[in-house]
Length: 216
Ligand SMILES: [Zn+2]
Image 1 (cartoon, rainbow, N blue to C red):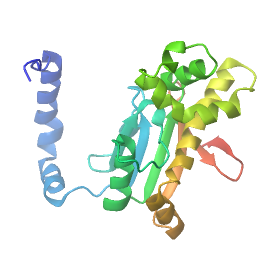
Image 2 (spheres, rainbow, N blue to C red):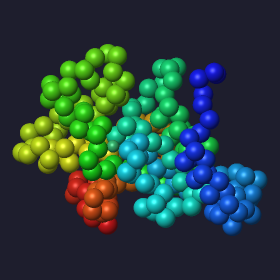
Image 3 (cartoon, helix red, strand yellow):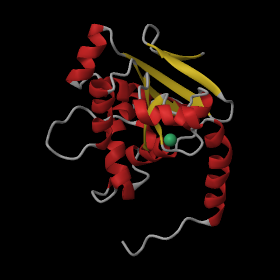
Image 4 (cartoon, rainbow, N blue to C red):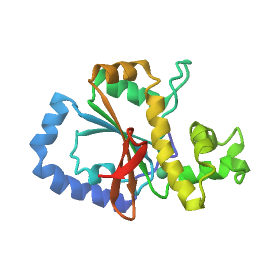
C-alpha cells in the first residue's frame, strides 16, 4: 500500500513518552494481559466523538472495557442477512465469547450524529437522505426514535431527547439479538443505558420504572 505515510512527529513523541513511562512502570501487568488474554467484565458502546472519553470517566484500566464506538452509539436490529455488520459482530463476540456481565450504551450531549439525524428527519438535510450517504443510512436506525420526540417544544430540548432516544433505541435493538435476550433472561448479562453531559461532566442513567434518565 504505497499511500501509507510515517506517523507525524507529535504522535511519535507521545508514543515514545508512553512507552518510557506508563508502559515501563507497568511492564509486568502488560505481560500478564498479553499472556492470559482479555477478560473484560463490561462492554461499552459509545459515540466516536473525541470528547466522549469512556475509559477516563470510569477510571478504567487497560483490559477492563471491551469498547465499540460508532456514530451516535447506535445498535442496529438483529439482521442475520449474511452481510457485514460491524456493530453486531462486536456485541456477538462480547456476549457469546467474552461473556461480559454488563453491556453499557453511553450516549452524550452535543452529539453531531444525532443533530444530523434530526436535520435529516425534519427535511433540513436532503444530502443525508441520499442513498450514497453512509452517515444518513446509519442514522436511519434512529428514525423510529425521531417520530417519538418530534413534537417536543424547543430545539435544544428535542435534540437532548433524541440523544437519549438513541440510547433507548439501541437497548431495544440489543434485545432483538437472540443470544442477548437469552443472557439477559438468564441473569448473566445486564443492559445499562447512560447519557453524559460533556460540559457538565455529569452522568445520567436510564430507569425503566420511570422511563427517564436521572443523575447518578
Ligand atoms: Zn456523538
